[in-house]
Image (cartoon, rainbow, N blue to C red):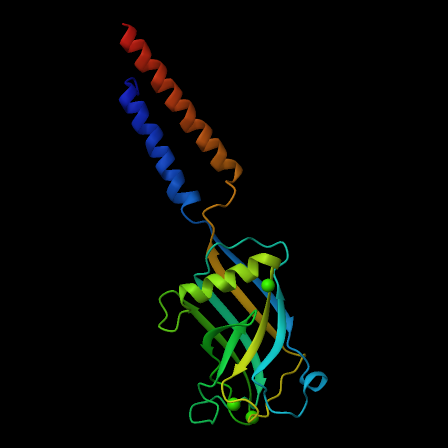
Amino acid sequence: MLRSPTMLRSLATTILLGMTTSSFAGLTQTITDSQPIIDWPLCRCGTPLPGVLDFALFDYGNQAKLCTIDKMEFTFTMEDGDTGAGNFDFNNLTLALDDVDTGIKLNGFNSGQENTVTFSLDRNSPNWISDSVMNQILSNLNSDGQLLASIVDATPNDNDANLYSIFDTTLKLTGTCPDAVPEPEAILVWAAAGTVLVVARMRRKKLASN
Ligand SMILES: [Ca+2]
Ligand SMILES: [Ca+2]
Ligand SMILES: [Ca+2]
């Protein structure tokens, strides 16, 4: 029986601590969007990759708000990208989001081939994005729910590559948001914990008056 105020208080504390770890210390959320890659012929057909080429506008509409980005998965198709091992643009092409260069190297698009590559990285990856860069991207994402994706070529105007709108490109972001609104069951647990605290206080007063 939970007769003593101390026991009741510790029960309430246990419930509240459980809440903190389960619902408030980081609700993991994933947002994802797929867009057709721009049709290169409608853009700068036949010309080499410029310094910056916009290829998709990811729109996360009414999806969850992220307060951190802890994981990123990006899938992209390009023909004749020349970023395979030993190709002349290996390590030269990177992904920018809202004009912020992520530093993610778009390697693996071989000379003369049409390749689809998925880049998957998280906080434990050696090439993970620095906090300052990520905060900039987060702020740009949260201001309008959109991220403009571009290829940055560190050695521009030397690589004929083809992007086709028949292929979709996908950007999936996973993060947490401690400020997330509690779910209904969480509110009920908070109410239960509050009730236990009130009962504990009443018992303490009663014991004091005895
Ligand atoms: Ca934006
Ligand atoms: Ca180049
Ligand atoms: Ca090429």
